[in-house]
Image (cartoon, rainbow, N blue to C red; front, side, top):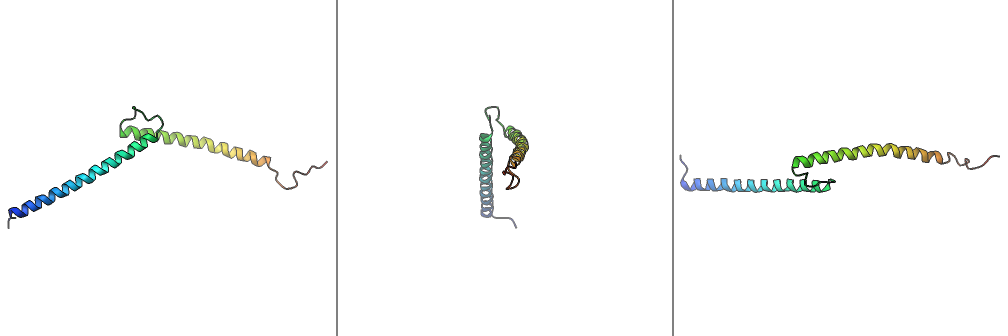
Length: 101
């Protein structure tokens, strides 16, 4: 049984409404993604005109994270060594300050 013209129009209208809603959601998703990339770009040091594409932003962010991880690895042993030296300076017991002559 063929659809009437009115039913086809409703069906076409419903399809168009769904398509418009889908396109709106996708536009919103893309805009949010763009906003997050721009926020990430602002957090990077020296993010200037050289960093234009999203791929470049991700590459610079990865480089920066690697750099920060390297700084942490260098800093941790220094802190541990400083703590050891500090512990050596502290008396090990309460009688250590008493001078025996």
